[in-house]
Length: 469
Image 1 (spheres, rainbow, N blue to C red):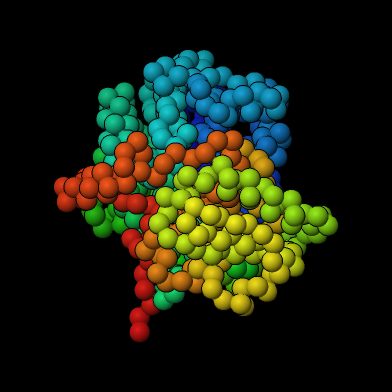
Image 2: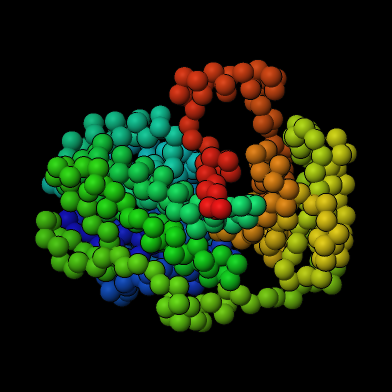
């Protein structure tokens, strides 16, 4: 068996003459123009080569990238989890899709078999065996999952594959949180590093439990080139690396860990090409990605009546989400600021009354706003009108959320916007489940006392590192 790291989440597995490529993305940006492939992919093992199967793990744009897929799919069949929402989408785009159920081991031919298992949040994992060696690709599937899901999947993998040779596991989370947040007194770089440290330790735990012969962190590195967020590239990439944490925590474990870069290749136990990750230098990034940087910061024109249309869409969502929004006790004022427009959208809540209207973009200077949500016209329109449009804001970091009222930080006012500013066909469920608010709070308190509460990945108070005074 051979394995090669192409870039981001793209891994090539060669087994008994078959070539299986995962999640290819290297043709242009994704999530609008927010994300760019970093480091540059190594295409030496895929361009001009026959690809028999392409595994699509889930529907996020950096894993299901149509521009790249359309360059590759001549004769290739796509592997996807049965029941996944990517299956009808890919078929509608004209691709041949093989659906694999959770409890199925699929024969790919030439003595190669695979499993494709759903995990959580519509994600999946791929395991490939050629009868002698096993490669497991966890991509984004496990390191951000709840502990119960992690334990179940780890137990299943150990039962199916007593020895795993190669393990690819993600170590970051595709999210706007916390890098897109501005909070009074917040050290943004330290907060980004703290969040990354958590996922590094999840990577370490998973690798230690599965005890593969070789393990590689991947699927987390991208270049975010919009000027408001380009600072985040350094603390996210450079603060610490999961391989260093693993060696510090488990110095006597025989698993060999490599902090790989595009072009890394192994054949059996032989390291054919040792390409390793290098720290990010922001000044160099702006130079080497100058063309992409220009595209990422280009402002487009908007239709003459565009803002009025957005106001109507937001108002429709407010009506649909009214019961959910009313569960937030108290009042608030939010300004949706569009960096490419001269007008903004104001959302004002007073009890159950929620008013949406258009105001001048400089209305922020009038004061009284609890939160400023800055994005682009095209991103907000896509989020409100496209079934997957919210990803450009909340997965692809297409917004900046600035708290103007520190009292609202503990209350996580941003959660209401995450529910409101997306394509909706029905109201969101109650934030308290099928119980009263009082009962919900009592149960949460008991769980915390018993140590049974999972880390809240979107709670600002849990993650924010304060500036030193």
